[in-house]
Length: 346
Ligand SMILES: NC(=O)c1ccc[n+]([C@@H]2O[C@H](COP(=O)([O-])OP(=O)(O)OC[C@H]3O[C@@H](n4cnc5c(N)ncnc54)[C@H](O)[C@@H]3O)[C@@H](O)[C@H]2O)c1
Figure 1 (cartoon, protein in one colour):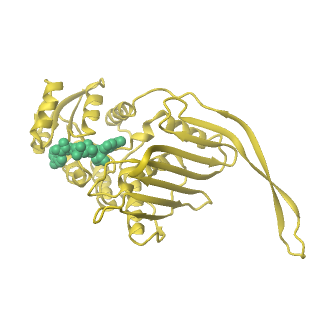
Figure 2: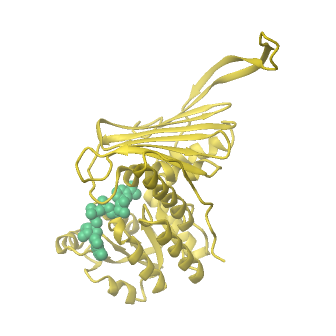
Figure 3: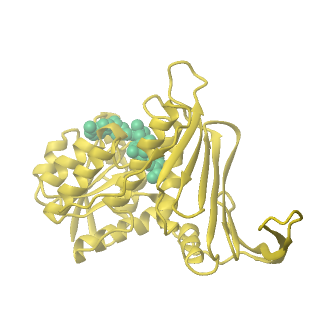
């Protein structure tokens, strides 16, 4: 039986606590939060669970093998690093840290100690995103573009811009679904509240091939949209996360190119003829599973079998590296920032 603790019982922490409490093979021992009323809420719902405001208690408890961190991003590095140094496996909320340098240090520390470091990239554990990865690897053909709109009248955050709150989801989906890694990023955006971070932003990711990704995020939209298009040479996907069923539709549509006649004037250029192919649309069956539950089960499996989670520290690092470069680009009105390939610990 693996003993676990959760730190942070605000908006998202209760989802972690519920899923850990409901998962066989793990015992939820302690929940830590700085606010007494949050701890009272834990006690009301889970009387057998110990509560504390002292994080050090978790680190000292030998029955606790793993710690899940659901506190604000600015505290992730300190809490995760001290957990790893105390020999605990770590499951940390997205984004893993506020900087790539800190994410790299967590990755290195976990590898050195042989501990599991998982990041909650929730979407990569949904049936819809798993199906998209399968389709991208099989039926779509060459991938031409990823185009996403993720907007709503969202909670304005004071410490991070909209890209750290919303684009992080698309970046984790791209990291999981698209076999190629981005080589550069450009971002534009503005704030409509003086002195606050950007609340609307447009990101472009560039790849070695002619694949392009575009992400539009906005906290100031009148309606909620969560819609992604993935265009391939053979088929295309429309993914609407707000659809109760049929979240994914696969379109057998595309173009066919045929060589034409040489252009007038003797130039060595051929006009391509573009033909259109319109076939059927289908909505693949998707299993109904709570992503967080399967993430927790995968985390436990990795602890028991020395495995690597799908969204491991390296995945968290790759996503934060793009967010960091995009933040620099935002400050320079979309200047293209090259991305460094991820370094592995020696
Ligand atoms: N995976 C997802 O879809 C998803 C969704 C929402 C939030 N999140 C992530 O979850 C994390 C928390 O976000 P939230 O919206 O729940 O924040 P929140 O502010 O609602 O809750 C954070 C809680 O942590 C507690 N806390 C802060 N510092 C602490 C410390 N040092 N020790 C103990 N407790 C501490 C606070 O008292 C608060 O109760 C963030 O990283 C966020 O990005 C993920």
